[in-house]
Image 1 (spheres, rainbow over the protein chains, first blue to last red):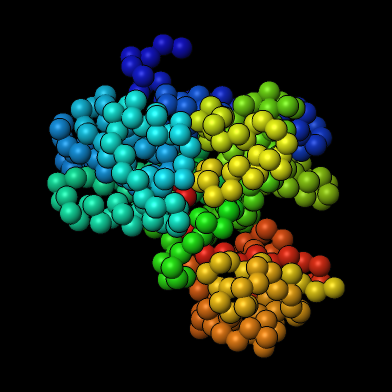
Image 2: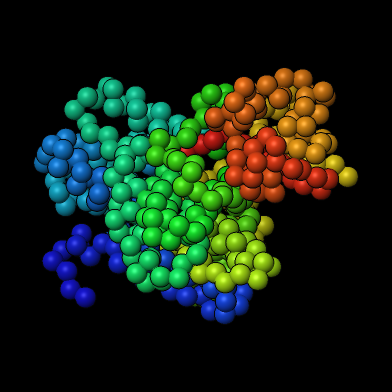
Length: 315
Length: 90
C-alpha cells in the first residue's frame, strides 16, 4: 500500500479474527486493530476530522494554537496533525496518566498543562474551559462535543467494519468521549438495524471519582443513549486480566482499555452461546500496550498490577 | 442474603463512611427506599422527579440500569449494585 503522506495512510485498519478466544465457530470475536494508525491509536481519526472541519470553517489558520483537554491519546493525535499543519498545541492532561503519554506529547511538540489527579478528566475539561476563556484566540476543538469526532467514525470506521464483515451482529468499544460508539453505532444501525451496540466503560479507582459534589459530574455532549444497546462498567482487574489473555491467547499486545472492551465482548459472546444464536462480535483495540509499560500492567501477578494501576487513568 | 450496594466516596457521608451497604427490595426503586430508611437523604441524591439523576450512574452486576429498566429494574438477593458519579473519559 502506497500513500502520499502519513495522514493519507490513516484508517483502513485490519480486522482480525480471534480463533482461540472465540467460544465457537458460530460465535466469533473480531479485533479492529486501531493501533495501526499513524500515532498508534484510534484517536487519529477524530483528530484529523476535527482539525479538517475547523480549517474548513475558517476557525484554524497556520500559527493558531489548539487547546484540548485529553487524558492522552487525543492529545497525541492532535499534536501530530498540528505539527504537520503548522499549529501550536496545548494539552490539558490529568497528572495521573502514564509517563509515556507525556513523553509522546512533548515529542510531537505539544505543551502540557497538568490538571489535578482527583477528578480525572472532569477536572481537565474544567481547566481547559477556563483557559479557553482566558485565551480567546486559542481554538478548543473539544472532542466531547465536536460532531466531527463521531463523524470520523461514521465515515470511516463504520464502513470499514461493514465492508470487512457484512455479517456483523455486535459492536463493542470503550466509552470515553462516546465518539467511536456514536459514529460506528449510527452507521451500522442504518445498514444492519438489528446490530447491538455495546459500551465498555472503564471503572477506575476511587481517586478518579473524587468530585466535590454530584452536580459536577460529566456526560459528553456527543452522548446519545438511544444509539447504545447496553453499557457495561469494567473494573481494572477484569480489564488487566483480559489484556493479558489477548496477548497470551492471540498474540495481540494492546492497551488496558482494550481489555475492558474484550471483557464486555466475551460477556456478549457467552450470552449468544447460551441463547444458541450466531454472532460476529467486533471490538475495538484502541491502542497498543507500549504507552502503558511503565504502569507495570504486563508484569508480575494480576493483583500487583491492579495495585499499581490504582488511581491511574488507564483508558 | 441481601443485595450489596457499593457507595462512591462522594455519598459516604450518608452511610457513615461505609463503602458498601446492604439492602432489600424487588426493584431498584424499592432497594433505594429501603436504603433510605437506614441512610436518610441517600435516595434524594440518586433520584429526582424524572428517575435517576443525570450525573448518577447505577450498575446492576456491572450493567448500566438505564438499559435494563431504570428504577423499575428487577433486583434479587445476591445481586451487586454499584453507584458511580458520571465522569469524562478520552
